[in-house]
Length: 252
Length: 310
Image (cartoon, rainbow over all chains, first blue to last red; front, side):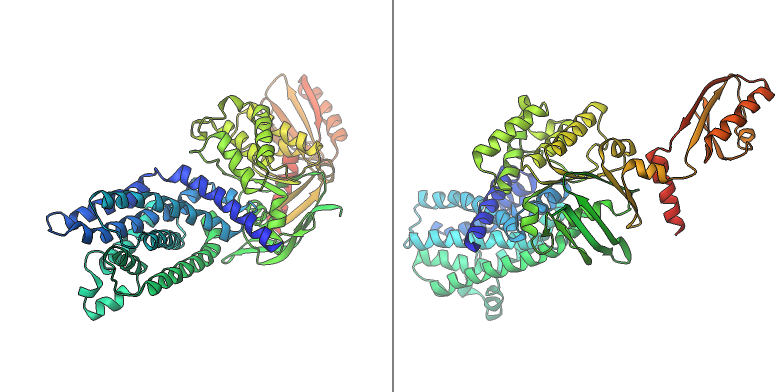
């Protein structure tokens, strides 16, 4: 019975994801913060520097998956509150967790789709991937983790202004990019930098991508996967708890 | 189980403001229950609690026997809502909106497609089923929202101000639909500002003010119970001062209404006799003379005033 209820709710979460993807992928803030910003950030950092593509790849993949997976999620709830569709949604027989898992799934699928682009670019330019299966699993897990993070960022404050949430999420995302080994390898960081880096989920993903392209990494593959799973669960649980509390405030 | 909705001692506070203050009422199965009150009376908060959108601070509520706070999903599965100020997804087509709601309620694909076709035809939206809701007029959007609520074939339908701001034709179409669904067995919980609408549609009415229930009865009983709200409406061939007419014995208030004068009284017959004497003495001619029962609006205003005085 419980299994049936869970599967039924999951089905409804997929319906929400389908709706999100239909509506939000082309919204201005999603395109600006999810695609254009990371693209120019990447160009600004690497143009003019003589860095081989094999080394660039982990940064490129890291930024793409990180930004694109977090682009739709934060925008959904404020958009829904503003366009007066949230109350209708809240009155349907869908659990709060399923409602937000739906949003996570939409962000996850969007991030996954976008990450194909740098992957193909890397392969075209001759990037050698020594562990393709681990890389695929890593991208899937990281996209889900960052999508959950995006939903967490939209939980507080309970605003109905998408730009406010996107700004807050950008304020969180940018510092994380700089401390997560995307531009400066973790091994080259000072001790305090490494400690700070260990609090960012992006660190473990870039480390995993490094392993898949270079065959070596700062953390073990197990630690990278475990950290990504841990962060995902943490983001999901905290996001759902906060959204449960703030949902009524968004409706008033 | 006789009642579709049972509300006991329901309370909701927003900081120091008590939006819903220990209210109690029942809605019988198959009735249209009107929920009337001025702005900020607690109507929308009550509906949000009963539809499981927000949690109360006290009390209990059941929908078809399901406790809305403990068996929330079961209760939500058999209800549907047209919230005040709700919107359809404007970036989805009418068809996609209906399909989405069907999926959220677990309506099988074939069935939801069949129901959607029927509803779109009923509301005159079938030809525009593949158009984005963004381009719809307010009336069309409201019909689509009602269609989304009806697609799930709910046992209890909550409507929060469903005809506010609509043109006459759209409002009438929605009222006809409400009547039809009620005839088919759906219990309707209708929150409205429109007294005429409540009077025409509702089997019983609750009047809420400052979060408290001021009265519950059927529209006719509410009118009959209201003493001092009967009136005599008269028009003369010449202008007459309302001040003079208010001095007629048993007249509690005289008010100009268009080209007529309305005299409020508990004894219309005595006032009519006095009016005839008055017209003779002043050499006037009566053009029209009617006795009026109190309207629901009169009852509503009186109850709200009494309630303010409490």
